[in-house]
Image (tube, rainbow, N blue to C red; front, side, top):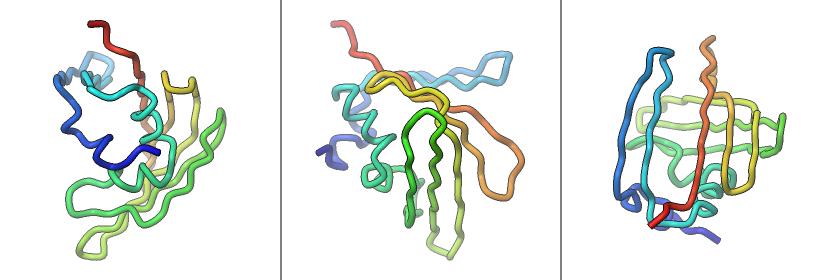
Length: 123
């Protein structure tokens, strides 16, 4: 099983961020762990709980049905009793390679699409 220290940001050796004309944000990272470990961090609720909330927030609930058409829901709680809850639908799933899902905050209309692509770096 993957542990939290194996998926922390310190495993990134290089990062670039760009935004194109279609309002697509692209973040590229070179990581020092196998793609399977990062895929698990996005698809196993116990691991996602360890990193899915920013700063002083924590994840109090997760519900993941990781399959094509499946849904997820995450509940983040802040130090001043704030609660934020993103949810979405899995649109593409290629084990240890690619995950595409929607991201919608509760009480907001905007739905975004997140694409995570993992590949082994060529030395």
